[in-house]
Image (cartoon, rainbow, N blue to C red; front, side, top):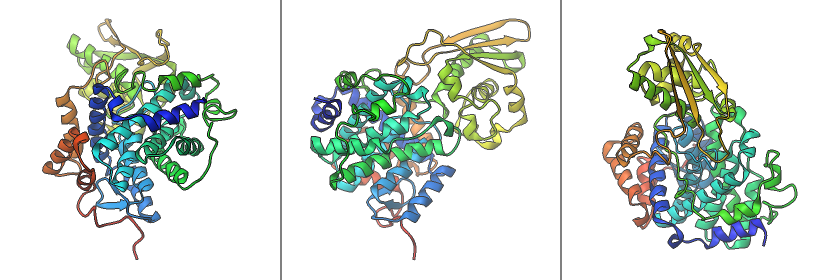
Length: 464
């Protein structure tokens, strides 16, 4: 039996009873976190632009666009919600994927689930399966795939979204194989767009493509049903010069579930995860030594080569570039002791004091004994005016699976994000629904709250 067929069988046959309790618990936390950061992204420029695009495209009002009071065709709703969810780069990530699985899979299952009247448990079940597919593809294809410049969130996430949609729609194995084949020809997204609006757009393109692939497969469109293992197929073409083990990918599905082991990384800071270990190391050094910015002459930071490629803005000029600048993140942490949503505005990045401090931060690449699939370490050296050098290496950053965010902090982050779009009574009800997701007989109530006033009546479409 081929790799694609075995993956399709897993997608079709996996049921709620197969999931460990830890995977279910973390899936609900991922939903809370992803919905929260999506609400915070509603008014970001990329969110407004993509929502206007969906509005102009028109189509059947099948699913809610979060925070708009409007509805669109399910793929378009997933496009907008995914882009808004990644607009702030505040959503969770996976070391296996080298990307962001939740912000791709959740918009897909929410849109498809709302369209077909699915229950909360059905939606959450599909989410766990889609998360598993994308992360296990990452396990088998990285670091070569990511290192070649592909944005795994979009490339591998497209197949994860298609898998989730196929399961939610109750496809058989053959139709699921076609859906995967169609999705493989949608997969794209490159690192060169990091630091621009197109990076969060990637997180919308993947669920849109996944739903489109499932819809076309349901209509009878065919694709190569051995798309993963075929010569010039997905694994070979996207391998980045590596030799991915298709059999190993298939055998790893559900053994264990990625949400259970190694788990997910939730972000305390709204910027690229590659910055977080060094940011945490600097925070700890400042706290332990009781120093201030006035005591510091320069900062040296060692990052993995792959991290230096991503964090490529050494003198950022926009908030989006600042999210991918280790110099900016460290300078802001040194001066203010935190990184918040308002840290990453264009105006904040251009402050003269910050621009001057970034010149005192020097970056070098060092493998630090790292192995693919592991968390990414950083080492920070703070050179003081009195000649002392403080040094700290961080392998585990705050919010990652080995240093998880406490439930109270997850809820606090959700509320801070949600209050930008919803009233307190609304976001508290959303939080309660998400924390009991699997008990909800339908998700219409949740989506009506997330959509905003008039969400059930107002389609996204061209006005007369």
